[in-house]
Length: 424
Image 1 (cartoon, rainbow, N blue to C red):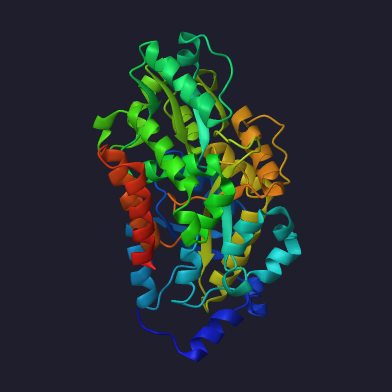
Image 2: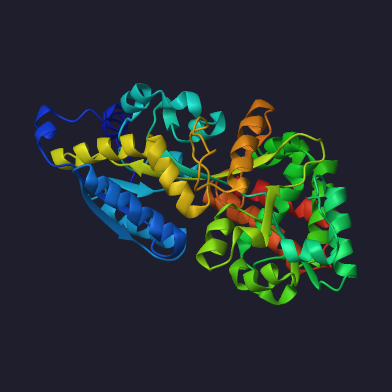
């Protein structure tokens, strides 16, 4: 990456969303890139584009299907070519990293006018305002430690209560195993899937240690007893999963999950959207919070967002302002989350009406409670807690542990600490 001059950095911090007077008479236009092209994500971004057009804008979305890396490669090429999109999908610490590569728009004025920061979780607000200035807008929130339980599997073992802590979870899984359910935990074989199981284990044991070890990379916390306990729990989870899933997505197991041949899933709220999109019903499964050993709700937060890049064109500046206002709009967040299965970024959105599942209502209430108890933490598996390089180093250790049962929890703790040190 070319180094930016001091002038360029000052321009990045000074860029304002206030469009010139001439922009007020032009038709707002937005060029955007994301990886969302299919399924509920594709449907949601398409619906957002239609709303943008209904408000007088020209919507020019260019999806880059596949992994986030491919979308980032396109973004990098456009930035280096001097033609960044007006906004692009980006999230977590990557927002701060990428805002050093090219000038971003200062969204402070439009955020202040909407009173938006007051209704956003503090950790979430912080990562979207690198250098103290809003440069990106969070679009939706997923809880990555959401527990999905098959209704038929519960009926099969005559259980009627979701587990609230890891001891209860383990007991239910063993009960399912004894009842002939070969794999009490439905899983995918991807790296984020493995990382998600570990982060749910650790955050459920101690969100305080999770914040210190995973988010702050504290050496003592990384080597502490809670980390060992998390790897012990992760081994149990791995033993209840199908080892032959390889690199497949968790969705391959959804028919078995709904049928009761697999018992539980630890997934993000997106699984609700995928299940419903596949033709299954809300009555087929139960949604609840992931296990928490201290009796207080824990929320592992993953949020999708758009970062806004400085453009000189009046129509693009007008489009950026319109897009920022729309993303903060409770009605738009409602529409988007009802399609994808996420919950709104705004903690003041009313989820009591039709179109919301009980699972989404519970997740939104849990987010409020977790924020109040300081037990809302950022997902490692989904690139919220650390930048890509550090995330990759840590997930390498976790994935190897899940796949190789010869590795002991003690060895895993040591390897994770060494991986962090090597990636610093």
